[in-house]
Amino acid sequence: MTGTALPALELDSVTAGYQRRAPVLRDVSLTVAAGESVGLLGPSGCGKSTLAKVAALLHRPYAGTVRLGGEPAGGWRHRAPRAQRTAVGVVFQQPRLAADPRLTLAALIAEPLRATGRGAQATERVAQLAQAVGLGDDLLARRPHEVSDGQLQRACVARALALRPRVLVCDEMTAMLDASTTAALVAVVEDYRQRSGAALLAVGHDRALLERWCDRTVALGAVAGPRDGTELRSVPRAPADRSAG
Ligand SMILES: Nc1ncnc2c1ncn2[C@@H]1O[C@H](COP(=O)(O)OP(=O)(O)OP(=O)(O)O)[C@@H](O)[C@H]1O
Image (cartoon, rainbow, N blue to C red; front, side, top):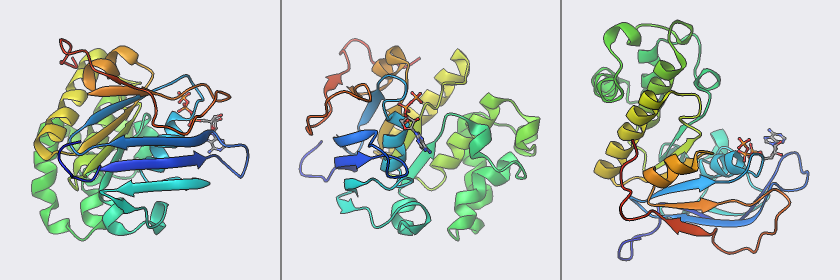
């Protein structure tokens, strides 16, 4: 964190689960400063995606507080205040589950702009974003079933950046992608983060990738493991290892 600026994202003693069953996250705290990138690692099933959804205001925790820019979350999912919903961009692992199959890739990228009354800017912004993620006009005119997973994920990254979020949550963004698409999308996200000063929470299994990509990594323990209620154990990136290719 720099100076006295409020953290972009804070999870404070969050306990979360599903259908009132035993929690999958217990008393977890995590802070991501503006401009900082944090990689979240942990074994399968330990609650990484749950934490990502809580951070993106898509899943209401049983207890604890989520703050964006110092402001406590004012609601969850569609009940979150628009200013908070639009402050967070999210990219999921499986673009086919995250993309409306009826929309062209251009319309998919424009979706958040149209939904927030910024339709007039859509053409120009979609062109900028498509160029950044490497999608040409031919691909922009196609629907999800007419493109590859990697091409669709490029569109989903563009969509997540459309409203210039202050916090970006990437949940296993590259898990289905080949090495070159992974490198390209990490570069797009990093370029955005560095130019905008947004905070990044990148969730994944690929320790080597997250350690190269992020300023520091934090580890969630096994599901049954102890939670001590303190900040997750944080490992800074090795100084010589700055590239995320
Ligand atoms: N919608 C849901 N309803 C009920 N239980 C769920 C739901 N989503 C996840 N879970 C359970 O919550 C636990 C944590 O799941 P989560 O997806 O957060 O883990 P994860 O660490 O992201 O796993 P992976 O690395 O395999 O993606 C798991 O036991 C999972 O079965």
